[in-house]
Structure formats: C-alpha cells, structure tokens
Length: 163
Image 1: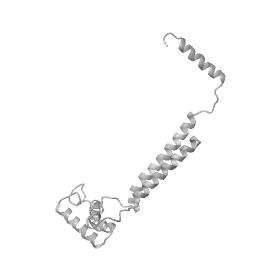
Image 2: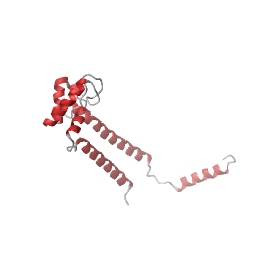
Image 3: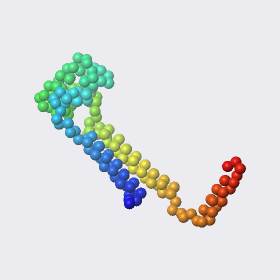
Image 4: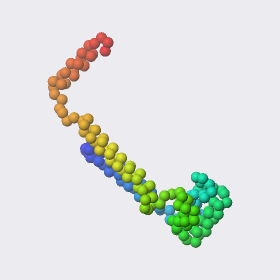
C-alpha cells in the first residue's frame, strides 16, 4: 500500500509531467502538412490590418487587407517562411502590425512570464499547504483521562432537557 505522502508526491509529479507535455506540444508546431491556403490564412490571422482597428487582415474586407492577403498568398507559394513573411510586413508597416509577440528577446518574456508565474505559484501553494497540514495535524496521543473527560461532557449534553 502506498503512503499518503508518496501519493501526494506522485500526483504532483504527474501534474508536472502533464504540464511539461502540454507546453512541449504548445511550443512545437507540428502542422507541417498544411496546404498553402491554410498557411496563408494562418499568417494573415497574425497580421493586423493597417486600416482597421483590432482586426487581422483575414477578418477585414477593406482593399488594403485584400491586397495583403493576396501578397501573403504569393509569398507562400514562392516558398518564404512564415516568419519571413511577417518580418516583411513588420518592416513595411511597423512592429505593431504583428499580432503575436516574438518568441525571442524581450518580447519572449510575454511567453515565459506566465509559465514561470504558474510554476512559482503552484510551488508556493504546495509549500503553504504542506506547512498548514503539518501545523494542523498533531502527533500527540490522546490519554485515557482526556477520553474520559470528553465522554463525561457528552453524557452531560445528552442528559440536558433541551439538548
């Protein structure tokens, strides 16, 4: 039989493995089998429309957005990488046009800080709960005198007319 402490450690280990697996799948882009149209759509969804507020070029139907979508399609067919296409539009319109932050440099902190915060918060929660559990659990043995005292108090409560 597994002790309670080992069960807790095992469950935290499984949670850690699950989180690491989700992060690995989230970081690795396994979509190499996309068609050119799917790639162009995905890239367009990450580029803001220069004329519209809060819309990507995929969502917008103004003339400039249609032109950008057509250019993205041409660049995809020619064989440019997704990052290269985004970089071209960032050079032309400015960095604000890229809707997803870069994963390198200072912008990479946008991706790292929430994960670090989650890990640190989970660790602090685990430490706090462990200390709380230790403080609330007592290893003291109840004496026969204490049991007798509790039993006499129970008997008195039962004998009361209102209780």
